[in-house]
Image (cartoon, rainbow, N blue to C red; front, side, top):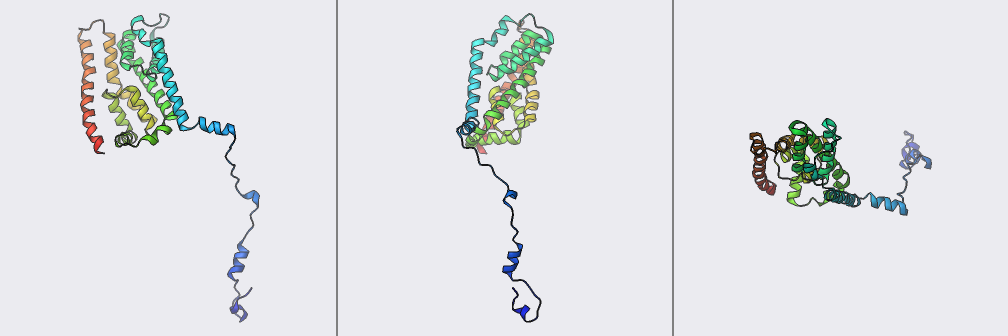
Length: 264
């Protein structure tokens, strides 16, 4: 169709309707992306329910309760009085002890007890190495379980001012925050692990801060355990002072940080 200007001898131009019609290109149905509908069967619904955040959190709680129950039944603290199996010795025994140490910390066994056992069984040097290896292993296991099974369910519950402030501190300054928590005892080992897992702290920062920050306190307990037979010796008294001093400093720092968190 030609407009009036064309009929009077001007340049021929197509009308807008003709132009729009010419630009329409039919697209075959096979070229369109296909979106598969979400499965709606019984099996699919069961799978979604089992993989939901709260189902995974329930699994985490069940695992921790089972671990704590097994500790109460098997009493790993008997290592202090009964000693290590005689068929194991040296580095092999220390490696097995480190693995058992890590599993026991996940099951809420107090680390001071395990550190004293490491010193009593393997001496100061080998016992410190085994205890530190078990500390990092146990922290990594707890962090992984909390991150995989608990983070999605618990993060929406971080609504209070103190909880948000603590989460922000761990998420933005994970390395130094966890390093302070490990250097100054006060926060239980398992609580620090699972709080870090719920936050957005990275794996490397968590494990590095745990390894470095646990050295002084762990070594002090191990040395005390290695010299428990002579409680009046200078090295035993120094190790006990090294245990008490960080605890006192940590209490003061936590008290001052409490007011800082409330103002945020």
